[in-house]
Image 1 (cartoon, chains in turn purple, yellow, green, brown):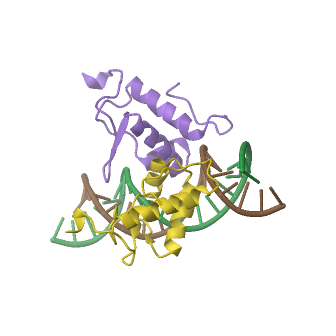
Image 2: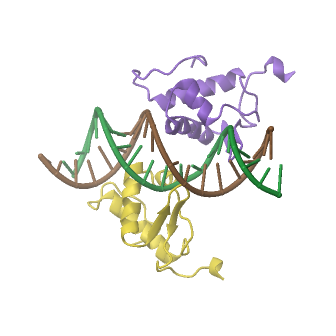
Image 3: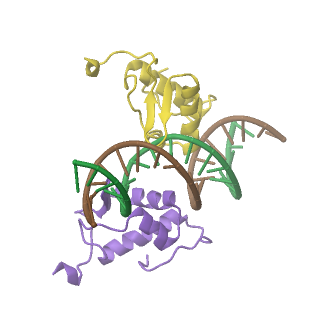
Length: 91
Length: 91
DNA sequence: ATAGATTTGTTCGTATGTATA
DNA sequence: GTATACATACGAACAAATCTA
């Protein structure tokens, strides 16, 4: 999956699966290191032009996969065990 | 009704009635005491593998029966008048 | 110490499409 | 044809936890 892909409502693949794939790819690429906070639900809604429940469905999927975890009142984070590529910030 | 029953899609009984029966039995058994919060819509969907509208239909039935009540933004709770069996937690 | 803003959690309502009994 | 059920997707409001000014 291309981490820079955009959402296509005409695709047969459900939108929430597209978003989950994009986020998974971005995490693997190293956009966010383990234990780092990703975009908030509101930011995901704005960035990808989706409804909140749709973004939550994508996030919930990645939580079930063990890629993300959430902390109420704080945000959504990359799991410590998530596989990511090192970036310059990890030095 | 067995409180530990599972949903059977081959049953002639509609799924939402099966779920309502299971939840009613669990409340009578004392899984949740009066005024205690039960599973959220999303948790019911996950726990019983149903569609959201189906779980809402079951919950709405129990609300009409006076067994449950909901508080928007908070959750679904067992009515104070609901008949339940005491459990160790009620001591 | 209070107020406001942010963020996740939850319920409520609605709509479309598909499939089955 | 009607009712049931699933899947997807949108929008809104309220609640609670957290953080910040």
